[in-house]
Length: 190
Image 1 (cartoon, rainbow, N blue to C red):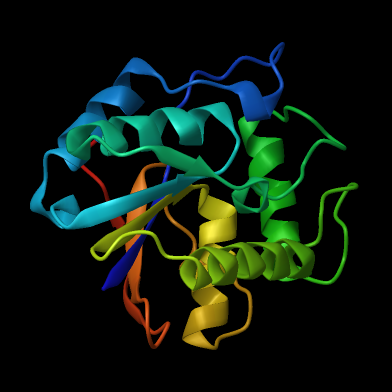
Image 2: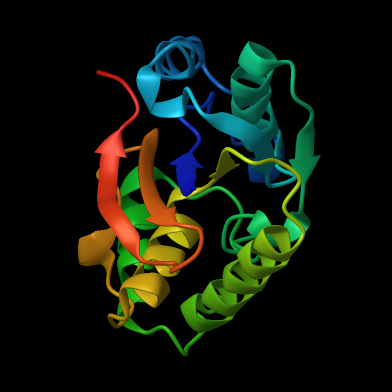
């Protein structure tokens, strides 16, 4: 059985709305629908998401294909960036670079990469221990925590070089051995 770790696709950026409440954009919905129709998810029997709106929306599109519920776990949330809130893209990228480069340090009040990695690992371990389906497990969450989990399971130091190049990617691992089977690949063309 495979575990698919899916990052939500493109969102509607609104500096006036908390990041955790951002919704999928029309492009994000279209890309997620294309992914949901693909053979990659044909064996999904259980769907989990973070409690963030964009992840729940993306997971809902996937779960609807199979008539499944969406289970949520707040520990699957993106690294806590509430200390800064919205940052313009160039500034965000610089802070994200520092987040990955200094995993044991809080950058501008953000949750540390090491703490976010431990949190997402604990969430996934808990989900796997309480499996409800016999097929593949889909986890719809976020790019940074997905990358942190990938690094942990791959046995490599935290590094942004393993990060997705843009929103809306998937990587997978074996549920029994926890060994990654591939790194980030786009869920659908942009």
